[in-house]
Amino acid sequence: MKKNLLIIGGTSGIVIPCYERFLKDYNISATYSEQKNLNKIPKKIRKKNIKFFKLNFNDSDYEIIETLKEANIKPDIIINSVGGSFGIKEYSFDLNDWKKLLEMNCLKHILINNFFLKRMKKKKFGRILFFSSMAVDDPNGPIVYSVSKSFLENYVKKSALLFGKYNIFINCIKTSIIAAKNNNWYKATKQKPQKVKKMMKRLISIGRIGNSHDLIDLILLISSKRNKFINGSIIKADGGVKYPDWKID
Image (cartoon, one colour):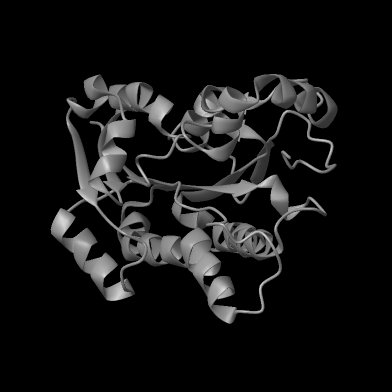
């Protein structure tokens, strides 16, 4: 029997290339924030038996939980792929900026996971995957964003210790420079390809920018029942980043 997979942020450039492989093994439900974002997913995938439903992280906690109840899903596996810096690059003196990035990168995900964890405990199976960023370790990383992802990583490590005995594995993939569909690095590869290529030779030990296809096998393994021993891990998939200034002028 196929297990049930819930993708939070189903229009994310990182997870879109995974759909075809996921369809072989899972019943898929996936969220989107705006109708136009569904156009990022190829039509041949949208026509498959995937349950897409609208869920917006800007909604209240109550509204999000009500949305999940209405969707009537029972995931065995959750992949959390909503997040970002949302344009907050510098130190902010506005506490609302800090709250926003904590909400978007961590707290809303915890809210959703908590809604399903009791059922996972009862079934004695669950796989929960998050994404973090090498910005956490980079001295030049945006501070507000970095702090929110640091919070997330600590949550992964601590919660995994609590739920591992129920065969619920909670992990995180930490990426560096990934050109995923329509993100800033993807746009840079189109607008300034030679400059990006030169930068990657300096910044990444393997000498090239990453892409979402580089992560497919890792995502599938960590989030599946084939993962029998990886729990509470922050797994680097960074191409060997060297941590200088990543910025594109």
